[in-house]
Amino acid sequence: MLIKKTKGFISPDFLIRKATKPWEFLGSDELRYRTFVMEQGIFEYHDRDEIDKDMMPIVAISTLASEAYEVVGTVRIHEPEKGVWWGSRLSVAVSHRRVGLLGPELIRFAVGTARHYGCHLFLAHVQLRNVPLFKRLNWEELESLELHGQTHIKMKANLQAFGIVSNPCRGWITLSKKKAA
Image (cartoon, rainbow, N blue to C red; front, side):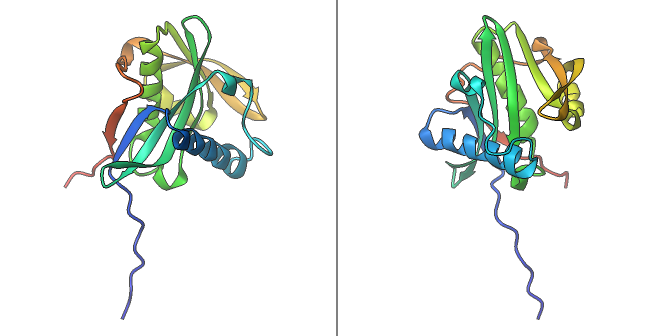
């Protein structure tokens, strides 16, 4: 008799919101560590920097029985000058990268949240491999530069392509992509 190994259950819906609870902040920090230190090796011990003092983490949270369960995606945003916002440290857990549209949803939510707070310019330094994703989301390439030993592209969001998030703390629910039957 052949016994098939089952895959772990992954909920089809996710909450995306501004982190407000201690476990959400911790989950964001842990995911950033796994992505930028352990997986990509960009940083040796941690990826924290001066921006972390004033940033706002956005999290994608998997659900279990319709309750918030685990941080599986994150991005941080900050406003270094009035109306000018930056996004950075976009990360989706390895287990959830092929599940749905978490990366694009985190980007949409980040820009929409910044617009809620009066953003008139939203920028990001994007890893080369992620540039096509950002271009599909109406971002414009500005210049190429090296950051932490990796090629990045400075990009600007077309703000008119993004809605305004009316309540960043409440957030929204997003579903994983479904295949046509």
